[in-house]
Every structure is written in structure tokens, then in C-alpha cells.
Image (tube, rainbow, N blue to C red; front, side, top):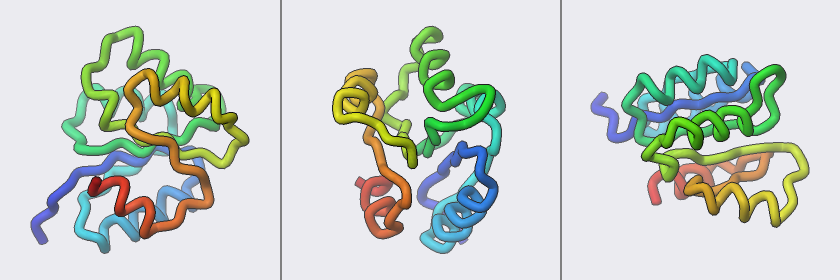
Length: 121
């Protein structure tokens, strides 16, 4: 199979990353999964990913920590980052995240057709 998109999924919940990996792979995407925020940050810098799905609420090193490090190191491809979260994020917080260049914020539970549309958009 020829993959048309390489996606990194960073979420501490293995059930979620397994489900996303299965679904996105069946949709023709190459999927790399990481269940740790710090490791996810390293992979973002090391890898050549078309899109990154980043959970905000992770223990020890959260998605917000990842975003802060990307900002500090002047990461140039913030538009590759798609935030997804089950936590209650206010509209103001979403707007602040979007102002950093993040592509979009997707609320959990994720509706797969919506996710595919956003990733392909």
C-alpha cells in the first residue's frame, strides 16, 4: 500500500491511540503512535510527519507542555498540529491555541469522518 499521509498520534491512552491507528491506517495513512508527551515532542522534531494529533491532557508532560516547547524552539510547522482533547477547553483557550498556528482543535470523542476530513483538508 502506498501511503499518502504520515500521521503521528500522541496520546497517553493506549486504547485511543490503538483505535486511531487502526482507523487511520485503514484510511490509507501511515500512523506512528506515541503514548508519552516528551517522547512525542522528540518525534515531532525528529520525524517528517504530515500531521500530528496531540492530546492536551497527558500526565507529567502534557500537550500544552509540548506546544510550549515547540513555541520556544520556534518550530516552523505548527499548522501540522491538530489538538484533540476530552478536557473542557474554553472557547478562549481554543482561540489562543489557534493563534499559535495550531491547525485546529478536535473534541473527544472524535467522530472519525470529521477527523479524516480535517486531516485531508
